[in-house]
Length: 493
Ligand code: G6P
Image 1: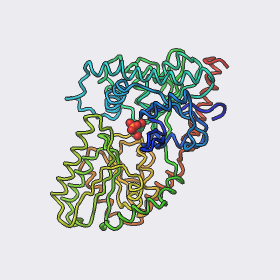
Image 2: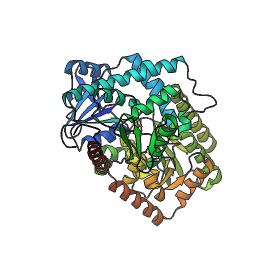
Image 3: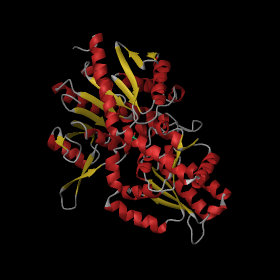
């Protein structure tokens, strides 16, 4: 990006600090899809990365540095800046509003006959948690723009929907780019939220110059929401929403992975060590899934499909293992705690029903272990990626890239990656357990040359649509939009 370093804003930052037993300050790299993607972005451009202080030590770093600090381990030239939010506000913002409220709305996860109940607690969490945390993020950005107003600001994800409006008020000519990494649901589903909340979300997003999604489907849903819920003027052909005097561009850019880096990781000694264990235990066939224990990932139906498959095809008994590596997630939210308990129950039911003393049909690991995940990616015969809804799903891209067994990808039609990879995967409706059971069978009996052909195509697409392209396409649009706005006299030239 030409000019001053980019200002990146996301709730979770690339590192968090802690104290070692000997009193030394330690830096720990954060995980998760979003941080990995943004770290890829910082490999290409200098940036200041503003994020929430997650630990007491982070807050201490913020106090001591009184501004940006160096992040030598991240990107080409990255500095960090923490936003310190008090514990209660953070809890309301993150555990009551962002997860689950907004996350559930955007992945269609509410069982509407039962939930959500929007009570005083939720309304207060919106006012005192979400809006307040967003004001703090906005203040941190405004401070930077006060010194250098021409810097491009890129905000990321559902934690930060209302921050752009405050930034825009303070800096009417700022360039604000917002990327939503999760799906965008249809207008009626947003009606679950009271009008003042859903309108604030939309207004917040329309304070940006560009609002970006992974796929055209989400971009379209967003424009429909602007039209129906905010009465905004929308030009669907040019993908522009009129908001006040400003035009907001709505675009889609499918994110990808850093293929060479991931391939290096796959060739590392730590992965080799985990591979040895997988190979020692493997039966003739290996079915794999790797996910966070998130309700959107549809883990339960995946196991139910495997149960049906074993009922239908006893010839595969003792010859197959379903290796499920599930990383515990958001255990401060009740729904997630219950979901993990249900996962354990279903697995134990299936293992008791089909297994015996020699054979455990499902090898369930509840842990976060990247080398083990990558080892499993290298050796699966079938990879199950069946989310109910998912913004992109990078596992569907990373795993085939390093797979060495012509493995077949079973892919939900409701994940962002399906637009690019669906034609070469076995595409399934994530609610259709029968179809998923059938897909497992079809994948296992597919001729080797067909498996190879499909996998090669997936590898090619993932290598071609790389992270550099993802960033480049956004940069081009940022420049174009700036030029278009100057011509219209929206910002001072
Ligand atoms: C997933 C989603 C991202 C989201 C992140 C938040 O990775 O795909 O869009 O930002 O979760 O995770 P966290 O652990 O920071 O709550």
